[in-house]
View 1 (cartoon, rainbow, N blue to C red):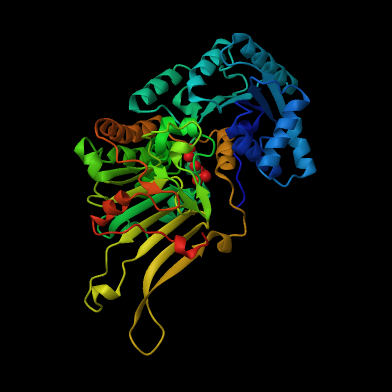
View 2: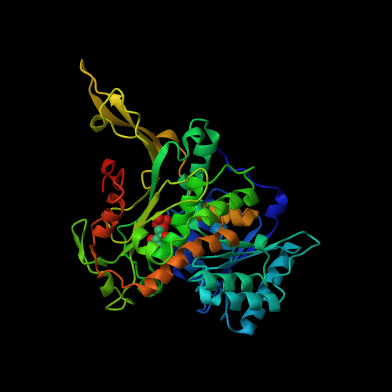
Length: 508
Ligand code: BG6
């Protein structure tokens, strides 16, 4: 399907100021995505990028910086596309704590606006350490850069990357502080999982087909599993960040809980950002918050020790640069949660995530209750499972019982498959492309609202609090290359269930 662009007003001159253009995120995700958008001619027609960083990349150097990011991302470059993109790139050298730097930025932005003949949409991307967000906002405000232009109806918006705080209290403080500079409608909180094509498809599958909704509830569903951001990868040079973060804050608080929200939400009144975000928030607010002893019963954590992945030796987490030799930080979390509403009463949602596991995948599976056993004995049948393979090998599977060919009456489990790559010739866009495009167009549907972030922190902070007062398991408690600690198996087995995965269908 072709991308429908919003009104041309949304695409008047747009200046994106990228704080942290030399950083990892800009280099790995943002610049390659801008290139791909340019390739598809989806950047606003009058788009300019102004990079801001401490090191000097003035003049030709910033173009070199862009080229090297694209080379690192192994993008097959088209000369014309690259030429068009490079023409749009500018740079201001500066330090976020120095006012003169922001004066230079303000001068550059207004010069670019004057060249365009009128004021522009001013978009700011904070791809920096979260500790700098408020400093940058303050400086932008002081220099009048946050003022929109009523004459031409241009807007200012800000994109911020997670983590939004490190617990409920700090998230609230950050939120309150940001609200001094921006209204909620100007803040785009990035959770890149919301931008993944297959994640967006969850809503379409549920609400555009009539066969799912009637069975999407506790009457038919026994339990739900979300194994998200199960990864072979380790901390990838981000040891210092991860040592302060851990898997619960890094992935559960945002990506995994958003997957829970999209799986469990009610049908929104329409597809507007306000309605969709409100429905996601309702689910997050309805999750039962585990407290005190309930936490150890329902949430388990792990940290990987040395092991092997794909035949390669992997050192333990504690040996990573930036990680303490006796680190108590978790690299794995599994848990069971409940959503306190009519639809999901009593249905457990099992979640798990971890680094240095045996394979990389994200899957959501809905496990249906067994069929009433009048004709076939329970041992011969298996319950239906609807699995959304979010990545890789994007697909949807329905696990069914069928008759094995022959003259007897043998039952055999089979899978009905909808493979994205077989069904659609169109390439799957990267999450960052999609989310940047929405940011340019002013569409917040795929960004987390303040209410969602707060509800997700309520759930995770209660776990963090309980962990503070209970001794952690003896770490490391799982081997790199395994599927996590024994505790995770025990958690689900206690309920008479097993972790489910379609991984066996694909090459590891
Ligand atoms: C990030 C986490 O948000 O998501 C990383 O900080 C994790 O630790 C990554 O590896 C996973 O994203 P993706 O898109 O590669 O599944």
